[in-house]
Length: 120
Image (cartoon, rainbow, N blue to C red):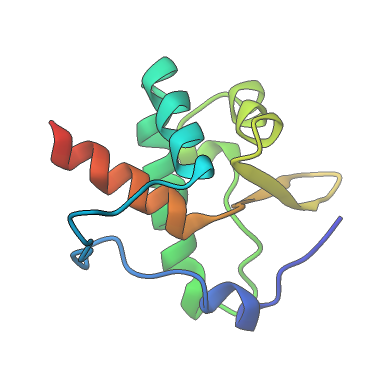
């Protein structure tokens, strides 16, 4: 079980409400393509990933933030586990009472979510 220190965590997240400036010739990474395909196949995970990214942003100011739980995503725990199995999220802390998760690459997830909104 790994823990992410607040200093490591805060350097990799930007605010969702900030506009992303992308070059018109932006080529997607294999991970971005994978997440986009995952969201195309399972569109109900789009809201869950947005809620996860938002939760991580809100947790930036809290030094005791360990991650989000399944209830934060409004999704059943077995469905959240699919994000871990697919490599999009990871378990940051597991206790007898709860499991906390973090996105493996929150910046990339937010980029994919923003670009998919712009396509619509």
